[in-house]
Length: 327
Image (cartoon, rainbow, N blue to C red; front, side, top):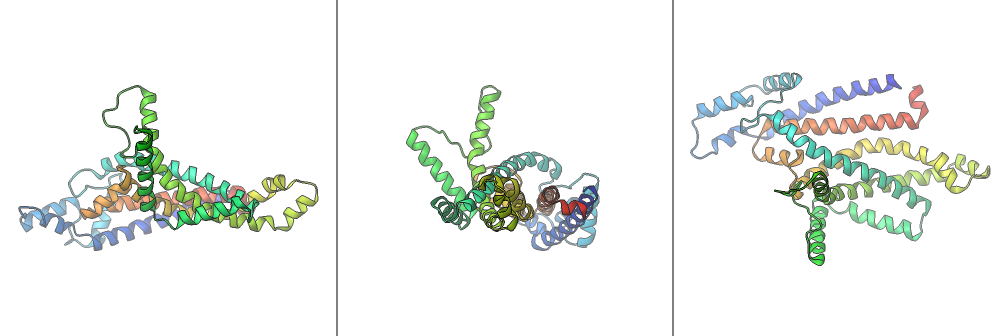
């Protein structure tokens, strides 16, 4: 198993280098840091603009391969360069990393577990009322864009607060400004602020994974080995949990790696709508400023997140399917 995971890790490192290089090429071609400086009032001298762009390593008069080599050399030494406002990308990255991870990890874990449970439950009760209800709710959620779902959640929270006559659900920012109190007061305040953004990510994840889990579970329920287990005297529930669920989770582990990219994309809109200053909000602001170094750094973070999800999927796949460990 260790050899298998090492091969996959090497494969992911190659993919990460390729994804980062392509992101740098795309950002350099699509964004114009020169126009950002030239648009300032009063307009600076062309020579001054050239000096600033050169100092930041994003001068478009320098070949893009040279710019990428300089930036990548800095990354290998732990330096992601400077933002277009001449602040440290490292400091901005460190400040926003915890915000995004808090949102992504909680939303992904809750959504994945609940989605698998809902899909398995739906399959075991095929064509019954609960199955149809889960199917309808899932399709409604899947057909609703993330940004619209986030706005609807905010509207629902406002209506709830007005109904109870107090701000019970807080949905703007990561915490309440000027909050006083002890440790648990701050923990509770952070949890309340985290509720709706997590729901925004988690509901989409539940809808997506429940559909796929239902499909794989139905395939397993009709398998010969499960009928054999029932013929030997096992109850339906015990046969499914002992023999069926493990097999049904194998394709889910692969699907998890691909589905995680959609979760990260959804988190970008979620952060912006709920006022969380994480990677997603930084990414949108960096594009508006033509901040090449920041855009590529966030793209690299996204690639690393997706590849780590792929590595987790490989570990789960190897744990669930012994043939992978043998191979």
